[in-house]
Length: 143
Length: 143
DNA sequence: TCTTAAATATGATTTTTATCATATTATTAT
DNA sequence: ATAATAATATGATAAAAATCATATTTAAGA
Image (tube, rainbow over all chains, first blue to last red; front, top):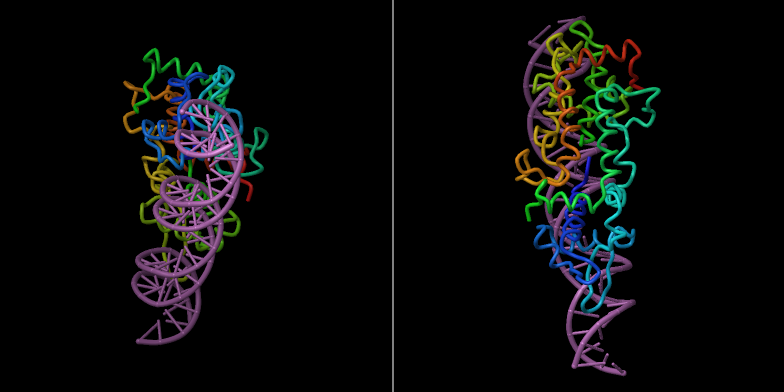
């Protein structure tokens, strides 16, 4: 369902949500290490996220990546859309183009409701909310 | 969530459930064409399924693949277990080893219930039941 | 304005997944 | 028995995803 890249991206964004802001930017190497993802790899992902305005960045000395309040207000699903693309998230489990509610594929009825719920949750939960879960100890991001 | 191979495997097994039995075996080329999967590729998958007793086969003239009643009584998830392995189905969405109910990862609470439901459904729905949905017109397998 | 520190852009390599090809073994029918 | 037919086993190739490397651009501070 999620690619490796997407998972890394979520971890990175969450890390930034917890540890950065406009006045406290973090550079790649200080992100890659704690989240345990190869530096060059996460760098590439961060750039994609930055280009898509999911996260913010400035270059040069004292530069780095961070999340603005606007960034934090975005739903989790935006991260996944940028990295994996909409299609991967919503396409039929059997990859049948012609599968839809009217003409459901055999697995459709088994999976569809749960899948829809997952997507809804990803759509309504913001980065900020997610990071607050971690702060409150409702969930854990082992770093 | 599911690999390409798993999707192909489900399609093939379903095709066999609908069109084969002990007295009517089907050979690879007559499976690969209608389900629209490369012959050599599906052949390999069918062999794995056969070895794992998900499907049956006999070789030589008049041979081919088919589903016995025992085969049909198996849950869908068995197909996926053989092709993708248990781990792919059940592992944490962020691939964090240490994620569990006691120490859920941030995405855990968002996704876990739906995921559990999906797995339950795949565990209790049999191949036979699924193929009967198709026969009754409750779902469609475009071939 | 010049040096340094950071992201950015681009592309190369490696690994995994998907796809293709061929030789071997088992079964049926002649 | 033997020829023909079909699965089986094994391995080679191709495509995609993940990982690594390097040169370029931008911003800060001396």
